[in-house]
Image 1: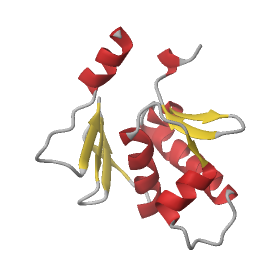
Image 2: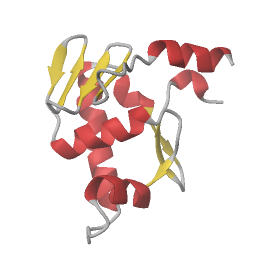
Image 3: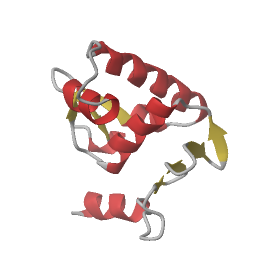
Length: 122
């Protein structure tokens, strides 16, 4: 319960800003498609921002590659599921260059990806 309370304290989503997600110093704004860490912009593509938003707004929930493809690219996308892996790799690299948030995108082997802090690993 303490971990849940700590996460909820760090999460700052207000009713007036439904398209804004703030997690500690990471801020994702879907209205302007911007991501900032410590008030510094991080240059991400539209898909990378949408992917980060989906994972961060569903903290701890595991998404399979197929779930992510359907949610971000749409049901009519005919590409390979490894597209998700490529986007996750680039997203992690860009976030790791500016912060620790790239390390919070975890791989769940054989399943998919989730957004979670290192303290939740066992």
